[in-house]
Amino acid sequence: MKFNFYFRKSSFKKDLSSARLLLSEIEKYKPINFLEVGVFQGVTSRNVCEMLNKIHKNNFKFVGIDFFEDRNLDLDNKEMTAKHNKLSNPIKHFIFNLILKKDLNSLKSVKGLLNKFAPCVELLRGSSDKQLLKVDLQKIDFVFLDGGHSYETVSNDLKILISQIKKNKIIICDDYDQVKYGVKKAVDELKGKVSEIISLNDRLVKIIV
Image (tube, rainbow, N blue to C red):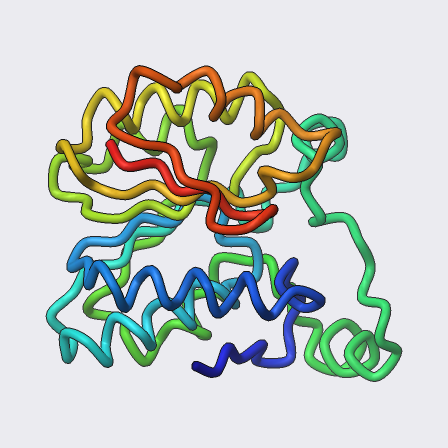
């Protein structure tokens, strides 16, 4: 199961096994309505859409939430996001920043990457606490949660999701193993409040609502 990077940054770059594991879970559950919180440059989004299209042939819905190009250094530091990391590859820096003058974090850029699936894709720009309230979560089958990483944000996102999505639907949280993040604490507090919590590997944890 191939995971493509489309010449963009992704936290899965050095962890292909986790990327493939996420895709295998999607293939297993075959969700029709998918939500990703934390789109970043759209690499995971594109791979997810490719998998959903393979399963459902354009009969799916992908919703993505992110701040996109609306950057705030203090917020990025608090939430431990990578938006302010510079392109480390000098060729990428030359092509995207100097020649194309293209911000890979921008809504326009991510829309372009997902254009192949445009009728099936909805991208929402803003904070997850506000944008999640605009999504009909009762229709969502599968969530990949990889937005803000502070305990407060992860805990609030999970609270909103679990209060709205239907029983037996799936939430996969990224970065469960990162000790400086708040993901583990927020997820562990759900024990006894959801049907099941399963560690897929050190990094990914699956919540069955």
